[in-house]
Image 1 (cartoon, each protein chain N blue to C red):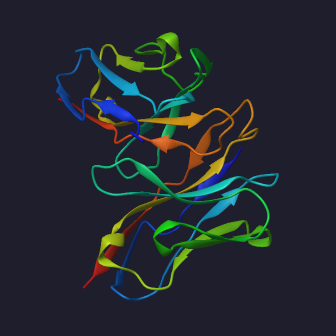
Image 2: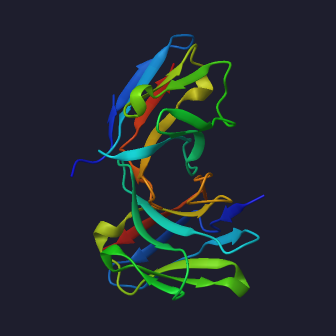
Length: 117
Length: 113
């Protein structure tokens, strides 16, 4: 069965420092991969997605992610973190048939990011 | 463009009481999802609609949960009776026809006492 693992429950970084959030997936075919961000009391906002093509994808708010098939990973990165980036980040993979008759997402448990001044 | 609207945003009820959540999708979005998000967890799908048809309700606990999407637009999710373990955030998401991205509403936070 498809699954998504986010190994880090909570990460704290200093403002201005670089960030990498890890995501590993279990999937037999080429996956549809997503990163969402959730601020307190808010719904999930899409940061970026990977379906095919260039394995380095750019998203909103200065985030990027790299798809590495050999490592089954889709890690999220940002070169310089801002205090407003403090939130919870979710990695997700499209279930089989995503985009067709089965459009479900399978989410990881999330990584909470805290930013120190 | 208005986003996905959910109401109420917060609901506190006593166990065994019924409760209903409402979702209004982005205009033109034909696919609608209800997710359950427990504290410290990622969202988990409850049900997916394509227009007015529930195409995947395999994860919906049908003994107490029900959902409807009349006319393929707004949707309601109901719990009757609520249990303590139902305390969670209920998220609605929608996707446009032919689209690949789900747009989420702010969710309804349910507390069952």
